[in-house]
Length: 441
Image (tube, rainbow, N blue to C red; front, side, top):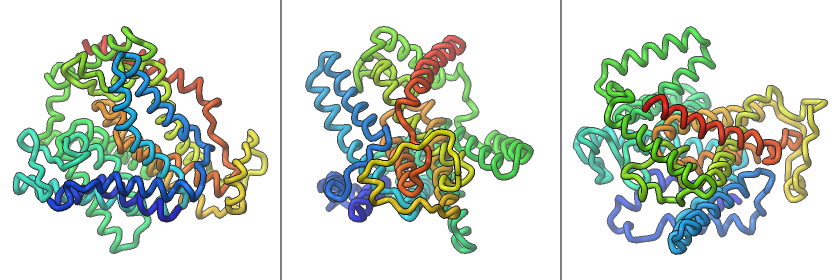
């Protein structure tokens, strides 16, 4: 499992920084597929996947449904293409979620993403100064920074910055004086990178994370002061936030696309219009991750997707909410289901270490904040199937699996217990989008 983890950590680092696309001699080599394949092959014989987490079958079910929606909408070749494109994400999810189960491995992942994102922000500073960064990527729309690969859009780059802020804050909390100076610099650099992307969703998400951080640490009054100061600073800076209103052309285009997406859903509520077919019915993308999914995949696919993401968030929320280590609870409210034999045989003794539990909680809180930042950005962007979302969900599942391995008495998260609440969230969110569009229009 160590080889698989090392390979997948390298893979994600390369997804972020893309050095193989910057160096001309490496551009034609299939470096990413080879590393991902090596990680999966190293993972296969080491341990069977612990199907203790429902996402380990929800994600394959989601990908299968994506292909089926394309097939049912009359394009067999497109169904095969969809499955082929999504297959690497499936491998990525399985390896991360089942190999990153110790505190040390989580901290390695957090540090790698925190550092890689700081490098992306530094690239943005260089890009603004010269017009073209060292990657060869130039600024977009006159002044918005970009990168290459998965982050060639300013909004995607802002999304990467937002989810990295909690991870950099985690590393800050784990460091001593010199390390604190370094990570404070990384946080400042990343926050400046969000400003340079000029992404309104990214700025809103960063503000929300700032408010939550101050609220949890200093209380309501300091959170209000920090929020007011941040809003005041933004008002003095030249950003696209100045034109954020329902009547502004970009915002109006978003609302119109939401309306069209709802009409797509109402026309084919069960199977949707097919994965990837949104652009066939409207010139703009959905500009909302929820609308994109229920329009393309129908209520069935939307329910699976929302369950996959929602249960991942619920897992880390449950860890954060638990006040004491599970082994110290004498009478749990409901008996925890035993782990599969193949897991319990290798699990450490349930005799808990409170310090380790607190570290797992901090890791879970970090991922919870990152998921919150992603959710805010994704409300204004079509990033339903984004690789960053897959990585975050995998890390949430890995945290839960790691906790269950160390503390088998921790409450088991099951799909059967959450299916009806998730169905309610799915139907309620569609109704919310419908009412929101009615009000805005």
